[in-house]
Image (cartoon, rainbow, N blue to C red; front, side, top):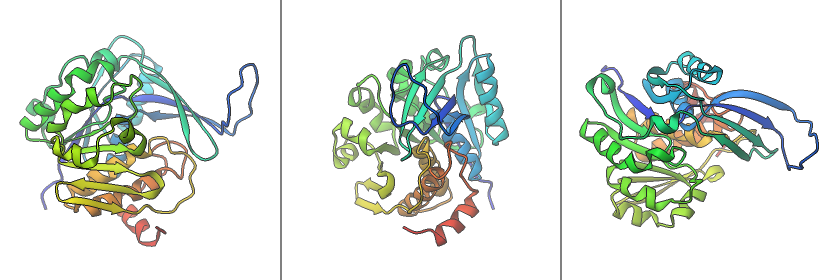
Amino acid sequence: MAEMKGVLVSGAVIADTLVRPVESLQWGTTVIVETVEQHIGGNASNTSIALAKLGVPVRAMAAVGPDESGRFVLDKLTRAGVDTSAVRTIDGASAATVGLINAAGNRLFFHRPGVDGPAFAAPLDFPPSLTGGMAHYHLASLFILPDFRPHAAETLARARAAGLTTSLDTNWDPCGEWLRALAPCFPGLDFLFMNEDEARMVSESPAALIGRGVRTFVLKLGPRGCAIYTSEGETLVPAFEVPVQDTTGAGDCFVAGFLAAWLRGATLEEAGRFANAVGALSVQRVGATAGLLTYEEALAWMRSARR
């Protein structure tokens, strides 16, 4: 059997400090919480680690600073089996995030951009030394990398020219540009991933997105599963019923599950079902990837899980 080809993942790699539970903020007070934990975070980290856990070769393209946070991130990625040869260490502070999580698992992030800003100030190249053994390029962070917005479309075009299929997970846009920044990317995308809140801000129907060049649009519906749109129509895939501890990074893990199944030859519906399972495993533990299983274990879990 031919060796499985992998995924190049670019975007933010971040040291997350997660605090739970937090129901409200009142200045000048002290709140007793159950957990204050440091986890690796960032869309590129979460997706990369999830892919590695699912047995997919993965190479991260990112940047960290020469500080404790940067060393923490590199160590976590390496221990998870992620190839970090394309993670650059450059002068400056690593990105950092504090996440406040309520009892229902919803979260609020406070994010400090770091060296990943200037590190993504030009289109990315895809030489053979980078793409060797890879089949797919996933842009895990667009809106959280302001300097990269003007270069994302060209990067996707270069990835396709290098023989890679492509995907993008939008995430929330703190700058409010939404469609203006995103639309140039559409023709270069095999897969576009968004959640419902993000899709409302883009205000384009699934059919319109497909008409503008996106080949497959995957809408993450949280506890209701996902919907998959192509030129041939819509496929609804129900979720699994699980207790929720923390939704941080669940969407990133969903994407990893979808790509892991699709690269193994799954249909779009089968990939959506497996992605729902990986997302469901993620939300049952604090930290994006703490609850994940191997590919075979996840398949076994699906057989007995309740939808």
